[in-house]
Length: 203
Ligand SMILES: N[C@@H](CCC(=O)N[C@@H](CS)C(=O)NCC(=O)O)C(=O)O
Image (cartoon, rainbow, N blue to C red):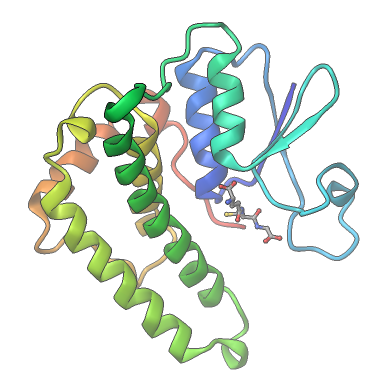
């Protein structure tokens, strides 16, 4: 299988962490895709041009980090990121959605900062900075939730990859005034799969 990534993508990072957590390094080849580039050969494989995407050994191509991770997690028949059933599924879904919401907004913000100076929208930059500030404050009060403190799960992965964008966006300074979130992040950041996938410059 091939997992298409870019070194800076937080969405691809989630999938890269799952590869490491599930010990799939020998089955999944990590391939750097050329994104946001006219006529990239990658568009022939993944028409949207987004990462992550996974080409399965039997042919089909999967995209969307949640779908790619779910597939990788189920390969061995012993998923570690499966959600509980029944009523117990709603808290993980609620928390996962809030983490995705932060990550989506931060991605818009980061993309805007990468546009040429004259093309950047101050309105978008302000809007996304304010959204991130509200969501980080929300997470400071929710991070003690048992689902965020328990064994590694998908909501935790999304949140750690979102907060990890501090490495790429100098304007995203979320730690001040958020000691619980900072302690949570620093603890998870030391985990080998997370430490090994810190985002690099690029797309
Ligand atoms: N919802 C998607 C988002 C993926 C996404 O936006 N990836 C960005 C990189 S962070 C990308 O590939 N951008 C290339 C482009 O927009 O052409 C997921 O969860 O996988």
